[in-house]
Length: 311
Image (tube, rainbow, N blue to C red):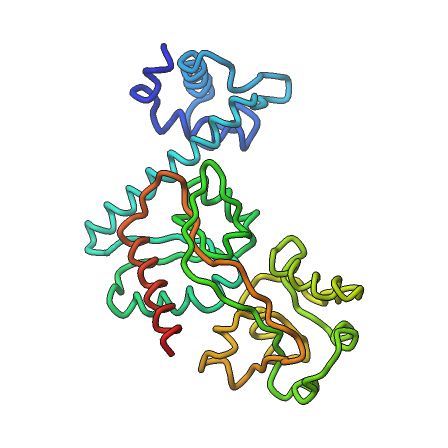
């Protein structure tokens, strides 16, 4: 069977089999997971490799091991099945009168204020759109974007590397502030030095994030070792709760510190200069089109930022 016929011949079962073989490393275990017989699984794999014209998995005593081509095929299989799942869910949603489903990845800062505010804004006019939010760092989220699990990512564009498969679209720019709970001892000390701040307890993003690197560089520029993080997280809920309830210092976007929902609990430490962040935007698969529901959420993000700027 020739490769140019693969797209007309391959079925969902072939793609699921490749993924199962990769995950279980055994034809027997993969066949059980897919609820097919072992001979059927072996025949499906043989037909698939005949169509491709190369080995996707190497057989050995312990099971099967993917070749380089096999790994690439598994990655593409995940993308195909994710897209089929999106289509299936969209059809099912339309059949039930729903407007659609959106799954997004949110990197710290993008997730801090703009995402929940945009969702609240969208829900007022499109309550039937279902939204899934996955928080994390770009290293965790980009593979889920490429696999098709996520419609788009939102966060600092510098945190999400553009590549041949990831396209980026800037939305807005923002600054980050060093903050503490209102009533923190440092609130009344606008001239606290970096040496003094270094001795405080901090909740910070992980070292690999752009925001953490910018923060550390302020201390490094003055030949001062940056503070050690008592807690490292990108979880907005954890950051906000701990900043309000403890004497930890942390970093939050300016939009959070000035928002009416939080400004009574948090205060900016004026002794520390704002961190000018790079552009925040969305990242999506190159050449892909956002679904109507995902496009509606992006437009809601734009609207919320326009409202915020106008204040």
